[in-house]
Image 1 (cartoon, helix red, strand yellow):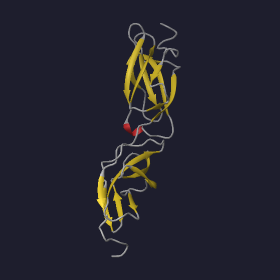
Image 2 (tube, one colour; image 1 turned 180 degrees about the vertical axis):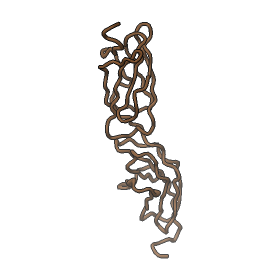
Image 3 (cartoon, helix red, strand yellow; image 1 turned 90 degrees about the horizontal axis):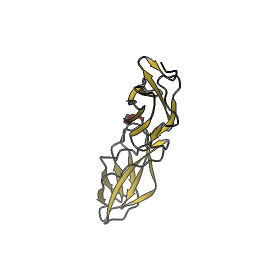
Image 4 (cartoon, one colour; image 1 turned 90 degrees about the vertical axis):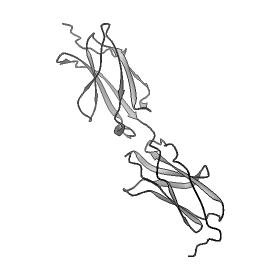
Length: 202
């Protein structure tokens, strides 16, 4: 039996994308190992190694793997360890990669307005991703200066737009931002107008 039982050829091993920052939940892997060997991948801290491919008669393998969406957006890298196995014997040496799964947050939903004289209050549904840290607010297609709303607690985020003019219609959108600076697609727009003759009084 080969002394290199189940070896994983380090020089041939490729992970696609090659960047350590994955912007998709799907990742491709190709390489060479001993013919018939199973190729295993372990994500440190997330369960036991999984068989992702089996080398063919020429020792070539390829695989696609879909990450759990819960792993995306982490500010610390995931440790991926690739080894091989024939029968009950697993290779001692393997290949290790340190990667981030970095997808943009989901588009915010539930954006609503409330008119308060010459002010408009916005509220929307809180994103559930743990990676989301804040939201940007857009008025008439332009980001509102200093309008970064922090993600905190479990309630609905909100923003109060001040000192608006009576009459014009204002259109709003919000986007979610994660800890790596990824921005979501902007929410569906909503519009509102301040009542003519409004003011700060009742």
